[in-house]
Length: 296
Image (cartoon, rainbow, N blue to C red; front, side):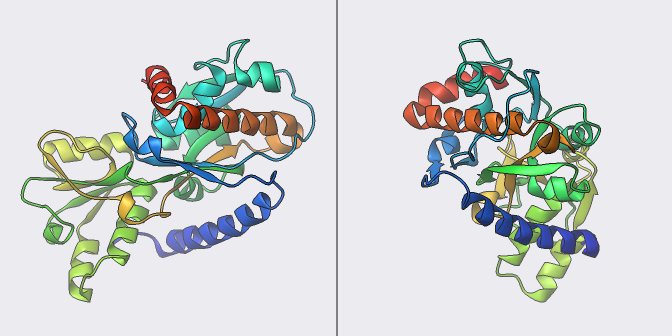
């Protein structure tokens, strides 16, 4: 399996460092018990579990400019849409009325494009996978843990391959670093003999992006695909990130320099995000319906 030993080692170190950073950061947060919102699991494009942790005290004033937030069109971005009452914050929204921040939510499904825009300073904050951020060279600063993937990602196969073991000797497409990381996590926690695991590692065909992976799977160039779920008609959901809890984290990342130039904007964003999570907790069905309509 061509994971790239250096990249893999860097991801492991970054994941451990992120856990230590998060513990330190949470010690500075208001004393609020984290709340897991299982309603995400039943969302139209769900499978992510929101991690609700109160934001830190305000650091500096809000700049007055519209903050550009790049997100995937998935329910993991629901808090931002709810806090803004849409993709562009309205005057009556929690973002504007309570925190003085107007947010423009940009739907960008390709994580590599979200990260490239962050690195170039074309957007202010991006919602990305921790693994994707590390693979892209860690541009900017992680400012919050947004969610864990618990079923939003997984392995889809054609009929006849109902388990990971059944994929031995076949071609398995994995989408970028995220797919490789999930595939490694699934193999590492599975009961495979050394020979069976070696065969499954050798089955991997790396795909540069989600679109390439979908095209390879549709054409039959690969027999299974490690990437976003759910499975489509005629496909079998072989495994999912629910089997490896905590393996894939979604984080909010500020562009390089934003924390230094506009710390008030960042904390206002986190405060609004927290309010969006509270709206999900109070009225899960209504909030998810509103978010789904905006995110498409």
